[in-house]
Image 1 (spheres, one colour):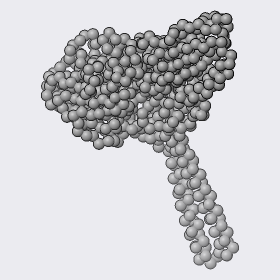
Image 2: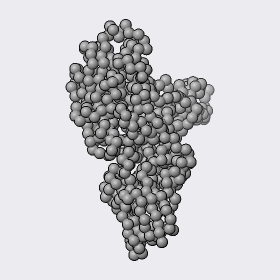
Image 3: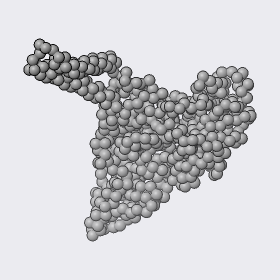
Length: 591
């Protein structure tokens, strides 16, 4: 299988920060041949050094014996001969050891650890791609357009495809007004884990991983609160082919199970449980396969609340638990996939027809239904290349790949087809913020004006100086308490402002209550956060950034209270939430 929606290029020139070098079936790299003629040169020197060492040792052993038998040799001459031979042996051994150490050093360069620059041989095997955090409006059901946070403008983001052992470099760019990260499931160190540092508006970060283990994995944003960022759409599939045990050829599909609620994005039971970002899309545009052929589905549950009970009609299938190909497959009629987990399903249909697939439970009534159209193999063999989907809906103009035969030991990937359909149905409209706009917004986060580009080396160096939302909230709470104690004695007036439950959802229309408030200069505002998500109340605007008049800092969810002294001059001051810039309020200060 190949990457379907993200360009993956080999690069022979740029430096990387790879964990280690290893050959794999998905790459032509070979460390021992990576140095070009230098490799043969080292081998030749090593052989010559070895020959010199052997010959010297022989001389060192035989010369003294032959001298002792020679009637013309004196004892002093024999000793001089022995000393010379020993010196020659020591010199040859030292030369051989030096050559061995040099070769070991060269090998170590190919095994570069995190924080170092990889060798040229390693660099040729690095696969590079870019993911961009973007806000977008898109359709998740017929006529239902919502605001989302995305990777590369779609929900889910593009499916990433690698071979086990691939060295992967992902540049993550944040083109939104709030912090995000890129967390990839699998094996990697903490600098590439995608939790800290959080990537601020207009910043970027380079993640370096070695792809593995083989199976159905996922990636998503892990900025706090993670469930909010996932439900808003920041997730995607990562499929890794096995290195040592090739899979049986099959027709392959990816199924990313999500959830979305347009009224309250954090509601436990969501309004929609779509597959690949659009409700019931495979009912109108069914998957297609031939009867008798193997169908492989990579099923990923990116949801945050309830498991999916994935079920295929009219067949018993094999499933790899947790989506890992190292696990032994089990026979199943329905397979449970918990939040943040996956499975790989392999199935065949004996008879042509239309067969449903879905999750058993409330999801199947809320956008999780689909069907697979199984065509007769003989009819499929006679079909025309380039035919459209079974329903022949010309508005999609998608190529029907059932005309492609699974042969020659190769699987047929339908990921391109699925992503093309997803784009046509979602019709995403990406919000393109200017650099100046994002620079203004980033001031609220870390005062770097969007100028800092992080890589994992810098991230590791500043790891202890990077705070999560939770850590910042604790520190800010202590500061707020001190300020509140100081200001209580001089407060002229106390005014209460609430943050509405559900205000974090940009489609809710909720924000601060009341939206406009009037206070006297020197008075205190008590902010009560009734939402389950953390917020701020910061003077300024999303367009211009914080003005510096007042700032609550982060107010934790579920009832946390913060007090802010308002010592501003009389006037009108707009304010907003730096974490959720759609939330805006207005404060009027009087004498």
